[in-house]
Length: 173
Image 1 (cartoon, one colour):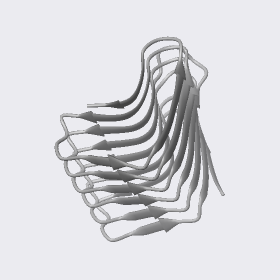
Image 2 (spheres, one colour):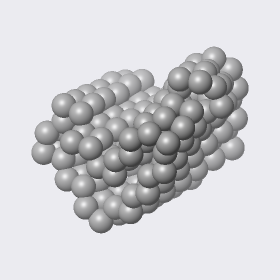
Image 3 (cartoon, one colour):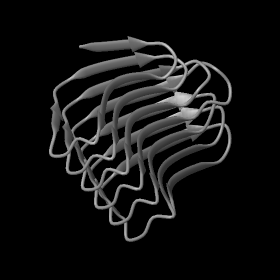
């Protein structure tokens, strides 16, 4: 079990690491800008069967953050993100500049006072999103699977539930 608390709190972070397997960990992070699992400039990593919980106070929270890390496999993870402060966003899985990633069989729950996003792709092309269960709720915009500036994504067989006080989307392209 990994527990971290404080500003810029990271459970596990990979930087410049390729072909790494991160599996069967329990990760709890709390604080302003909280990251459960994070990869940066790392390719072909497998993140599987992890239990990740992030709690924020005023900054964004990320269950799993994948940045410029192509060909990532995220499978069978259980992710819970939430904030208690104002204006913070919650991301179950966030991918930026990470092409050809496969996100399969994850359970994602996000809630809080900001926008709550189950899976968010930013400039991440050719992603496969299959058989995930995603629940989002909150007091601001609530979204589930978002493809922003991302091409040729494939989302099939996912179960999506949104409950927010503002605009709610299951899949937003």
